[in-house]
Amino acid sequence: MIDTLPAGRTIGGAARRIARLGAMMLALAGAGGCAAVSAISSASKPLPAYALTPVGASGPARGSRHIVVELPTASGAIATDRILVKPTPLQAAYLPAARWVDPVPAMVQTLLVQSLQSSGAFRLVGRAPLGLFPDNTVLTEIRAFQAEPDGEDYRVRIALTLTLIRESDGAIIAGRNIDRTAVSPTADPLSVAAAFDAAMGSALREAVAWIANGGTGA
Image (tube, rainbow, N blue to C red; front, side, top):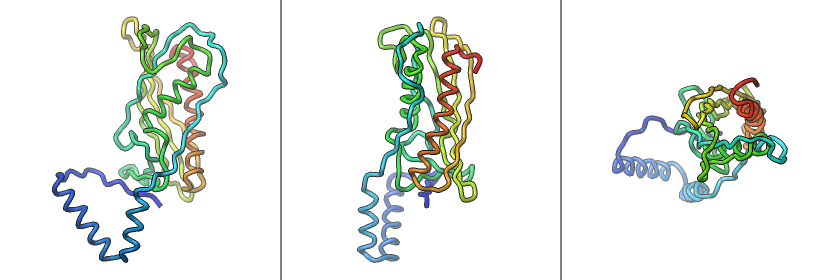
């Protein structure tokens, strides 16, 4: 089961409150009082959180470049800590009993920073210049970060667009699209998260190799 996220809602605050009150009254009329209170209570419980893992083994820095990874950009449906499910290209939904440890853009930024650091290909990797003038900046757009029902399975898709900037003159060195998928056999949050981890690991390995090579090659 997934929670459907309504799209395109534009009603004002007062109308929204009236709509919510009406929905609550209908729920109370259609179910017992205890069941309604139980549903409200469960909605306030914290959701189990899942984290993805960086790639690469930590080692001494052997590169000379200082690189900054900016916070990635993403659409509103992706830029949340909920695990996105897209039943169709026109629908957005979320797994009802799970979330990410951080909003997706912040999580992807952390994974990129940690993976680049672990590669040993750079002198310094950070999220901000920290008073130093970086050699390169990595811009990332998250185009897809979702699970898509596929028969009995769930196909996880992660799509990133990377842009490598030379800070000395602001020139774009290169850009790269990365699109990776993995399959979860069920909608169980742990299984879906494991599929995300597999797809993200593949995307990170390609991103690290490409950035380490200065936007060329692998």
